[in-house]
Structures are given as C-alpha cells and as structure tokens.
Image (cartoon, rainbow, N blue to C red; front, side, top):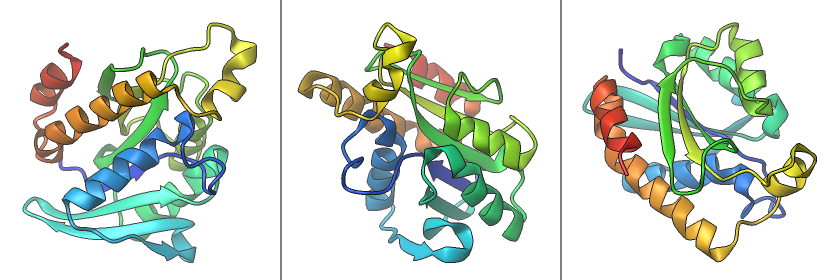
Length: 190
C-alpha cells in the first residue's frame, strides 16, 4: 500500500513556529523543499496543501491550519475528498515518549495523549494510519508538558531533532513504496 497523503502536525502562527510541537511542520517543509513542492492555503481542506507527482503516484502534503487539537478536521476533509484510505496516510509528529535524536515509525497504535493524533483518530474513525514519531523528550512531569511542547528546544535538542528530520527524509523512498520493514530497520537504528 503506497502513501498518498503526508500530514505534518504543528500549530500555525509565528509564536509557535520554532516550538517542539511544530516538528511535523519542520519535516514537511524540508520534504516539500526536496520534492520541489509549493504549499498553498486551501480553505476547504483547512490547511496548506501541496500536490506532488511522484514515481509511485500522486501524493498530497498537508499542514493543517486548525491548531493541533483539531488536526483531524483537515486530514479527514482532504482524505475523504480524494478517497484516500487511512492506511495510505502518514502523519509526522512530535513524540514526548521518545528521546531527542530518536525516531519511531509504525502503523496504528494509541495516541499517547497527543491531541493531534486523538483528533485524527476521531475524524478518520480508526487509528490505522502510519506515524513517523520524532522524539522531543519529556520534561519529566506531566504538569510541565504543555509548556514543554509549546516552547523552543535548546540548541542541542534542535540539532538532534534536525538530525532525525534528515534521517527520516532518507527513509522516505522506502516508506513511499511500501518497504515499511526496511524503513523501520533504518529509522530505528542508532
């Protein structure tokens, strides 16, 4: 099964641009640059959208403009319009439960309290979409999580996050062509 929609999660607005919660946007911006894709605001899809012709077929890139906790509204709107199945969707997001510099790639699973994932699961009616989980570390106390994800990472953490984005981009050919196990071996290696 090929990926037809890649969603980067984040929050719109300059005050959120460099925060940990915007890792998905950072990834998608880099991917769009590599694929020479241009985003344009699409009201009916509640976000910035780019269409890319790839060897494996047409792929949509989406950065929801709904804020994190309503991301599913954008994902469902585009997926329903273009008849994209949940298992043809890749969601790229920040992950508290993974240390900076680490990546996890999987199909389905829980939402780990991530409001963007909760929203997508609710709107799509299933957790069975792919996730590229980029580690941002955990502040150590759940009462500190909101402030943690909505603040800029340290320079050292940002460098580790940027390295995970670069490594993830290297795995995209395998992810796009359904070579999921090969992608997992590469992404999960040190």
